[in-house]
Image 1 (cartoon, rainbow, N blue to C red):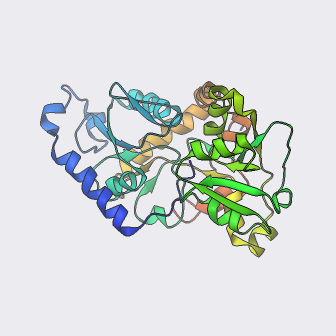
Image 2: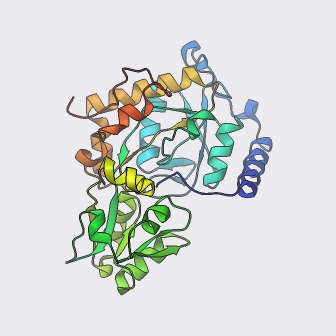
Image 3: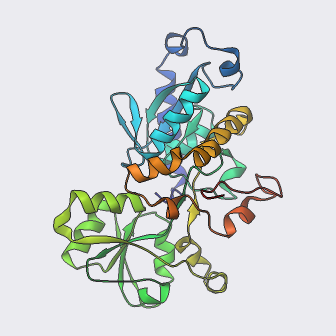
Length: 312
């Protein structure tokens, strides 16, 4: 999901209270695993041997089933946690609660397509990108749109608060249709009331399988050029963005350990395997755009940082 979303302060505070209440109602000592190794304990999680994770229901990225997080992000974290000797303890909230839980250190981490941004990293830590989210479009079969220019004058749909709202509003002649959730986007796309739906790629791919009657397909937008973004800054969100697992500012050891495992998953093929499991194309998800490295260099990464990528 494009996790750079617009949320009011009131919603964020409410979410923080909600996740704080959940945390207060549980007993860390009762849930702490026995015989935690010194190496695992040194990671500095709130409860030694346990990694508390805030997620929102957002299949096929994150869903809690039977006390386990499933989905692409869930599977990645499960692999990493096993390598680090950590037991995953999920807490379900909304997007604002995810961020608030990390920033107030009520949880150890949040996952689920969270987009890296210069502002967000000021209040927390981002791991290396587990994957990169390409600009995906849901379109009706038989239709083809490749560039921003192709979108001019069309009816474009997305979910309220998603970053694509601003991008769509900047397209000349385009009509914005904003919906409470992805279901509304797909319904109107299938009915012909919308020409293109901007949603996260795995959401579109899943809908293709689950709702074949809609007769939709996934297309990837050719990102706007630097000159186009300079002329219209809102076009920035038509470019690919890098995701990250998001941790509290003080969780430096844990962030470094998780990033090291993420990087290893690119090398050993595990990341490509998981992306394919959920219908994604590793060439789209696991190769960074040219500006990914430069956006983080000297901000929350060294000046010579190279982002992980397949085929290196």
